[in-house]
Structures are given as C-alpha cells and as structure tokens.
Length: 529
Image 1: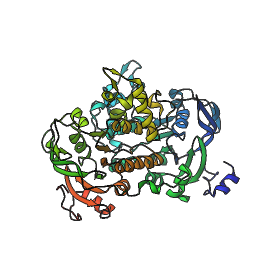
Image 2: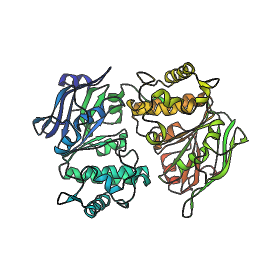
Image 3: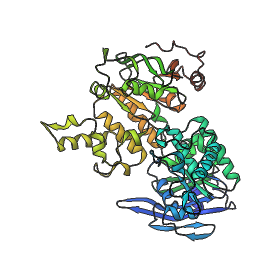
Image 4: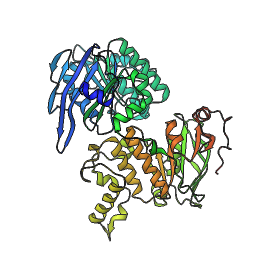
C-alpha cells in the first residue's frame, strides 16, 4: 500500500518505520487451483510487539501464517528474517528459525498424555537414546504452572475439556525458545480467567523480545493486547496501523467494507404459541452435586431465547439434556404442548428438535466428507426413492440450502475442511435445517468465526425465527446475547438466577446474575413464561 493510497483511504499513520522489523513477508502471492488466496501482500512483524492480523474468513490470514510456518510455499514473493531472505520449506525448518505456531484448530493426540503431546517429535533423551520421561514431566509441570493451570502431565488429552486442550496447545508452543510466535485464535476455547492468564504470558514474552503474530475475531482482545494491526480483505492488504490510533469502527470498515449494525436488529416475529417447554431439568454430577438443578424454560414460535452464563454454568449441559445426549438427566420436555416421545437423539430429531454443537470440528462436521454428504447426514430418509437414495433429490435439497444460506463453496462435492470457518459453520446449520426442525438449539454458533460471518449467522437466525422456528441460543458474548435475544435466561452453577425480556437486560444485570446474584432480576427466574 503506497502513501498515496493511505491518504486517499484516510488511514491512521502506519506503524512507525523506525520500529525494528524482525520478519517481513514481502509481495506474497499464493494461488490455489481456481483461487488467489493472497495477492501481492506485504506483512511486517515488529520485534517485541503484538502484531495483530485480522480479516474475514477467507481473507488469506491462515494461508499467510502457513507460509510463514513452513506448511505452505508461496507462489511468489519472499520472507525476510533479520534483513536476510530465507526459504522455509517445512515446519521443522520454521522451528529452526525459532518460529512457532499455535493453530486455530486444536491439533493434539487425544490418546496420548499432556507430556507426550508437548514433546511429540522432539523428545528429551538421556545420551540421545533413552527418553527422559521424568525430565519431560518436570518441564511440562513448569509450563502448565506458568499458565496457572492444575493439569496432571500424565492425563490423557482426550479427557480434558476443550479449554484445557487449548492450554496444552499453548504450553507446547512455549516449549523451546521462539523468536516469532503465531497465535491463531488462541482464546476461542478459553474462559475469561484463562484469557487473562494468557495475556500475562504474552506480556512476559514481549518483555523477552518475542514477537507475537496474533489472530482473533474478538475486537476487545485486539484493542486490549495489540500494538500494530494489519488488515487483509479478499487476499489483499487493506491497511496497517498502530492500534493506539484506531477504533473498532475503523477496523470493521477496512475488514468488510460495509456496515454491519443492521445484522443484529431486533426482529418482531415472536408469537405466543408455545413450541418448546422444559420443566425441572436436572443433571447430577459424577461424585455428587448437580450440573443442572431444576431448570425450566418456555420457547414460543418465532422467538430467540438467549442463554447466558459463565464457564461451568450448565449452558451446554442444558442443550444436550434437551437433545437427549445426557441419559442421566431428568425432567420433562414438551413439544408444541405434547410430552416428548422417547429420550434418544433420534427421537428428538424426529419430533423437530436439532442441536448445533459448540465444537463444530469434533461434534459438527465430518472432515473427510464432502459438503453435500455432511449436509444430508441427519436427513437421509428424506431422500429415499423407495429403498434407494435418490441422488437427484439429494442434489436439489443441497443446492437449495446452499442458496438460502449463501454458502460460499466451489462445488457441493468439495471436502468440507476446504471451506472457511464461517462456511463450515453454515454447513452444520444446513444439516440441522435439512431435518425440517421446529426448534433449533444453537450452542456458541459464532465461536471462531469472523465479524462478517457472525453478521451472516445473525441474519440467518433472524430469518429462521421469521419463518416460525423457535431458537435457543447460547453465547459467551454479552453483546451477542443482548442484540439477538427476545428473552434471556441467565444460568449460574446449574440454576436459573434471572430472566429478562428484551429491553430490560443490561450488561451489568447479566454479569451480576451470572455471578450468582439475583437481586437485579425483574422476573421470577426458573418459571416458564
């Protein structure tokens, strides 16, 4: 971007040229078959700074990071480290240059321990022969302690919750001396307390001269922790600036080139016709106590019911219990005024309830299957022609869903993992919608997708509510819950502590109720409306 371009776009001053650039991606172009992922992009990484890289899904961020990390090779352009041109042909070569990466999608071995994951392919040995297990465990304990966590190094990663697995990913990246550390959505699965810990670690790394490349879709994080920001759109460099000179509105304008405030406008489609009622849902905890205790709710046709609470409040457990995924749960579920028949997931789907899970990668998409196959997985019986699947019916159904959700895909036969995170999430939603549900349970539907994709998801939710679906919507983001919900329930330690109508809720009231205080509630919590 030239100085003339900057003046025409009225950008803030770019990061000062006197700041030392440790790594520069210069004139990078990356062409995949049919797609130009990066188009002559320049990207500066400043020494000892948090260098924020931001853009919509599909803007080229991950491709650029994979080039720096040695996973992909550029079609043209070069990398310059400490003023010298370098070629990185593999992640091992990147590690040799002391460049590390924490990937957005957790990449651990669930059947191995925390220690074994951290030292995979770089085992600590005695005399170069015998693996030093005790030494590895000691280092692992130090890394976990640095991240202020209480995780046994011998625990199998598959037994850890998602946030703890993310902590292990971070610990693995911290092992060894890195000069440049790429963090791609490192907080997507972390609690607020864990985010604060990570930010303290980042501050320590900066003080040691480590340069951080930080990718996130959470604007408050970027402005809180970033020093410089670089914005990509459609594979092109749009702007570079110092964070202290910009605000959220400037970032959004450069990222998406459009105003997104209308995406979360209130819809006026709710009726008084009950579509779902849950009474006294209770889920015992292994070892004593309860994950859910006597939770009741009511959902009307065309209503978006928001569920807010802190980590461990029971939000996911509530949706899973309604869906039939928690056999130990007890309580009564009514669909359109009638008691639900059966308690299995298949029973719930057959009666019109479908769940969009929080973790689309492990519980949503099947990564080895195509977009089309992922979509029809839960509704194959609808595409039967006598006893055989009708490819024509299936194709028509998939094509109609691609159009209605504005899914960006080259062909329905494309492998689903080739799509951006936002489009993968649309595939998960499409699979649920193809069962023709009455009730949509959505658990963190915007986790790990960019601001443009979030706006599209909100538009989809509003459209579905307008068509008469009832939506139960869980989110950790206060602004999302306040913007999208007709009514809001707040959970704390498995109980409803407050219920608000639209217009009554504020951030302060939600946070207070989520902490277990119920003195600010205007309604009687826990009773179906």
